[in-house]
Length: 114
Length: 115
Image (cartoon, rainbow over all chains, first blue to last red; front, side, top):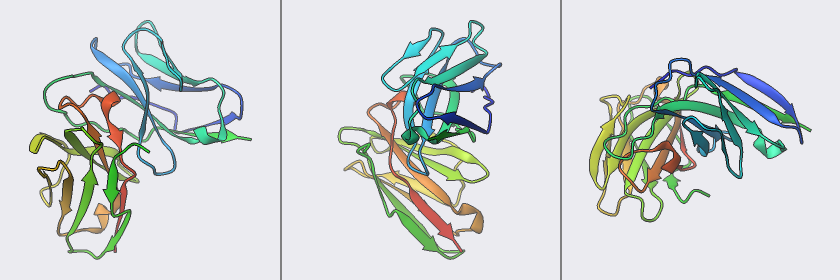
């Protein structure tokens, strides 16, 4: 799986958009970009994933650059409950076969400020 | 609430001891995954079981073992514990064997402290 690089921490004002970057310059053609978050040592929670096109769901938007070497997770109106560690993971979207090892890395600690 | 349950929530034990962590997957899910999260290593995949059989192995130490029972709950056994085994241990479940990240639901975790 491709390695990702994220800033260790970011602040965002409540109500503003939070833009969390991720670099994955060694991503291969059929690897997806996944985003998870972990709120204060709770179990990680899936947010969104994408391959090439930008994606949006009820939680967030994912913008992937044309060369796919980086992406940005956007929380459109950050709330205090969005304070968490956000993980960017790049891997194959296998739907069969065994699940190979994956490491979530250390992510970006997002602090939403009132 | 993800529907995945883990017990106990907290566990404190001494070096050299053995402990068992338990996980019940979401109703209908056949796969169980175990992860370890320590302060310096981030969240790492340990092992996966699908419908009672080991499916994939990650960074699991030989002192650790797991199994999945006919009722699909799983147990992670940690033996000869060392201080460095202190961590959060998460279990996740999914319906399929393939391990797609977007299909995994994580439990609340067990915090293990080895003294």
